[in-house]
Image (tube, rainbow, N blue to C red; front, side, top):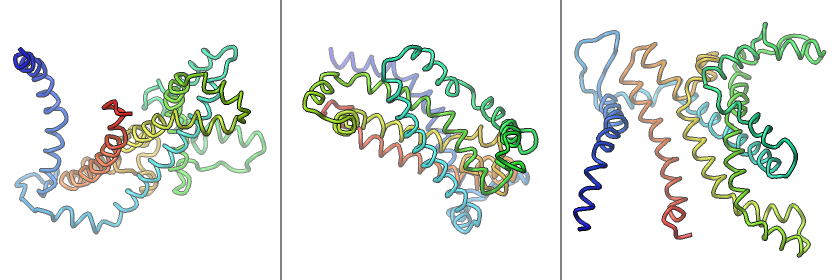
Length: 294
């Protein structure tokens, strides 16, 4: 009977497995396959097998190291700021006060907006000439000339990081708030009886109970950020001079502006490897929680 139930279960799962294979595994395998051929979209004709030549060529690419550096700065700085701001917001929202429900809804607005809208909005706000932020700073007497938020190679990436933090921190805040609200209040009551300070309550009660959520949120954010494309592309297009290019935008440029599909496939393999590393870390760290061992 159990064998029949097992077979029946696999029969019902089969359509989903086939769909997942077509949507996920086939593109991955196809991308790896293309990385071993010389494919140029504008040239057409034969697609000769070149083995590891594409990988060797990109290893000597002068631009790719800066793209990887931008990606690492983009991921770690954005994720760190989101976790810090999200934690502070969650601790505040965990307090009891009037209007908390309204405030939560207001905080979630950046999170529910589409990436396209967020990118277009902040591109206008940060514009050097017509941007509201520059006009406000000038009228307030804070600056004498407009700040080049998006057109300066030194500021552009950090400006977009600020936008992305504004976009993502509400998700982190709600995630942490959910974890805070399941901590037994008896723990805090016992700590108060023992004379524990607010700092010690946070360090020895709050932090251990939300550690899983903090690390999980960091890893999820990292994977999202590596895959992000729309906001950077809309705001700067990866410029100026590759200053805001990350792996996602650079893959698009190489494939559809330079027409070097095989090189784009190699960069995609690199991006996939980084994402796979984050995913494996996630699985290893939380294997015990999922299996119920902790």
